[in-house]
Length: 630
Image 1: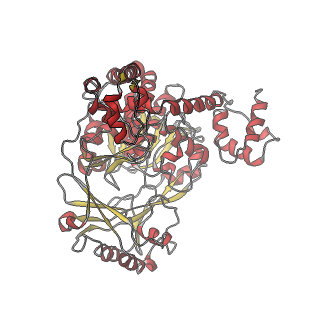
Image 2 (image 1 turned 90 degrees about the horizontal axis):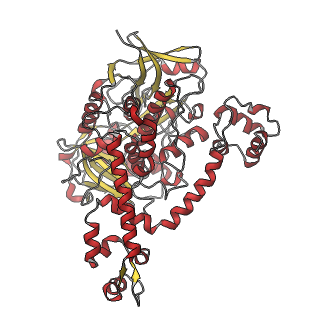
Image 3 (image 1 turned 180 degrees about the horizontal axis):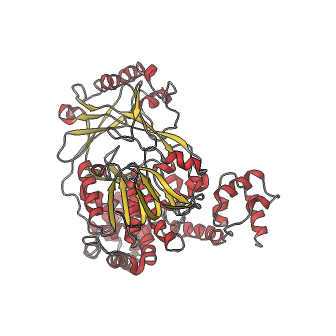
């Protein structure tokens, strides 16, 4: 009935969709198995992509040929660039999406790929022989063979939904849990754990009084995620902001006796940086109110997402409390919020390629690895799909360094440090933030994609190929050089610029100076200079706005960028020192017992990776270097 596939991807959430595309783009024949064909790429929680550090990840996925950015641009209802009051290393794009359009666009793009097939069924187990995965066994008892398997099960592995004192099996509201895989993996020697996440209630937007809330408009003009020629938003839907109050908190506390979190019915740890509303008022008892974002679910629906009000309290308590929030006095609820508890596998059981140590050609991606968020899941899926293709073709794995991408930081953190609570990406987790900006992901990563894929790249109608992507990268590089050269060669006279300088509190000039020097001053930017200087404005009008942003950041932060690159290059020397694949770490008796145990478990590929494992000290690294003859 089935051919033998190159790669089977289990689960069609954000990780699964990107995994399928990652392997299929390189030429693998992929089978995407999902329990429900109608929920492919479902936005289970917030109908939005991007955010702090997450927006950088979406741009990196796009630069590596993934689809998340393209789908988001085609289905967005609002776009905002966050953190513009801070430096460019902190700028992060975020888009509110139409939930139904997002899933439909993803499915359309997957179906357009000639290398992707689909099967609707639950995967109940894996075919494993002599430590090598050989396919999957479905709930209907079918055996489907493949050379590699990528597990992207999300919250479905033995998932339990909690609402007050009620609990029932499920991987998402209205969908059953997946069983069988956890038990088999534990028998194979894997360590498993439990985690928890939650989602807010949904409301009827027609019943809300938006006039009593703060309006949050999108950027004008709107930006976008993809470096390809995707559309920009011409009209946008507003979001709104409102707040809880002490009265709301008091009502919520009435339900604490029925809270599954406070009564110990939930064993898994929830996300520290996205706590439930009951957790907020318990942990931050001194706060009189908490901010809530009232977000539309799409163009053609009245359904509203209440961002910031995740809860597992009884539905009547949630409803009673929300009706005391400004603008929600007459609110009608579509469904209550709930918590969901599910199995995950500590990620220090993986290689940096996301292949498991215990079973060859078996890869994990997404929430199964202990992460939270669509973006974190999507980038893991893409990397797992790429590496599954490379593994079955006996090629070296594709691994991004911490200095190359937020994706590299995320995977390095997971594998070397593990996680006992849902892992979320922040800019603070990256030590090379100035190098890893949202505006330069194409320059950083698309050349790596070209080198990786070469002529193997599977062209898909309507999706730019590598040559087209590289053409845009080359145009961007050339534009930044031309703009920088103009600034270094062009002088400006005192009478043309001093009025502007004095208006922003900057010292006037007494003779002609180069524009480059003026731009480096605080509070001076391209937008301000081009209003004063017609020649400059005429030059800049030739370029894409994204090219201008890259050029401006490159000039203003050149010294910092060079310094950070030097630090990255120093660390790269340790990354180039490879450790033998079967190195016996236990034989290094001059090393601490903890270090030997951690190194034996993680099995680092390089000295650099070994140095970042929790419990491995600089002294331990020195011992390792000595034994390697360094």
